[in-house]
Length: 201
Image (cartoon, rainbow, N blue to C red; front, top):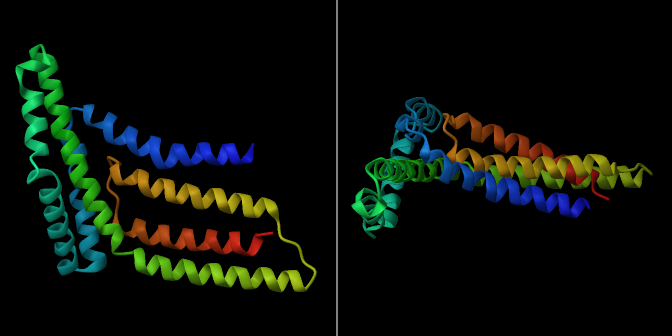
């Protein structure tokens, strides 16, 4: 049963939540919800510097252009949504707005993923160190006839899953994702990995 609950959580956080955000949110009429908020871009500049922040924007533009503009996907979807084949004028206008918002959201997802990439190496190093330290602590407790708490391991495992799920979900979130968020993710993930490693049986 625990395995099935774990699988259902995986499906929910890694697939359903991001997909719902990506395909349902573009129906909202306010286009400001789909752009990169100024405070988000400013936070990236404050944390990593203007030069690296500009590199992120350049990389995002290059990827978006190469994947979707140069291939003709954006033009094809915009033309299809604005054509008379859709049906009545109101439906056509809604479809065109949805497609426009969808591509704005895709651009923002690519931008946030590019920002997140700046912290991947440091996060991996920190989490690896936390995991090793937690494993050493578990061995010390075992040699001293201590015991590991299965509940702590279970909670830490679900916490790790929650962090990963929220990391994927916020890529399409309509609110600003400040650069400090990724630092917090690294810290929380490292702490949870340490707890899971020290409680593993």
